[in-house]
Image 1 (cartoon, rainbow, N blue to C red):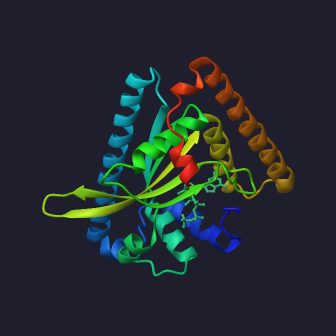
Image 2: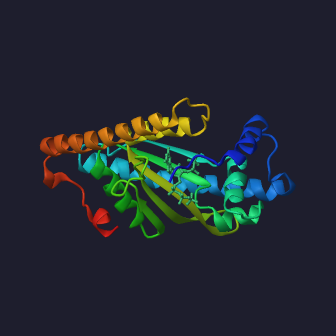
Length: 238
Ligand code: 0O2
């Protein structure tokens, strides 16, 4: 589905960009900031797990499956827009109850099978609960978007309590990431002269990129051999 915001929401978005200090959660700012702190700690926990996996893989397979990891906490204005688009009241309570992607981690892998190997190793850890998995690699979005999305819960130990926090992990190849970055830039550009042509061209690029990822995987298999491939159990279980 095209993720571009509806026309009626664009002015809201522009306002949010122009006046970021106008936090829509201003009336409950202490609670909002505490919740964001909790999400940011959850990101640290999951990111550390991913870094440990990468280090372990580098010893076992003599190469790193993860190229790099980025993370972000969704901005207050984007949180408010998402709640609004789902017709949910804009409040701090609504955030934890309804949104899965306030804490987001993006994992960029070298090869296709690395994506599933990393995902499998992450979700089978005892303290990780897999809430949902969407495989947009096997089932790309109509516009050509490809990525593996995992929604996980992780317990975070704070000074006087433990809370399960939700994190969205998007895992994709470098090529998929390149495509998604350009697509994301265009999402907020509403003065494109021939949008249908751009959509078609982007879809063509997505298909080319998908084929390139498959070709790169074959080259890797011929270099490292199939027996050195990490398990594909996660992929098969999805
Ligand atoms: P941002 O700026 O990344 O935060 P949900 O989030 O669960 O309510 P949905 O539709 O089930 O909604 O989520 P989905 O489609 O599984 O994943 C949403 C996120 O995936 C988006 O977050 C993007 O990060 C990414 N994504 C999904 N589709 C596309 C796409 O076509 N192009 C690009 N570039 N990214 C996509 P946000 O909140 O839209 O944005």
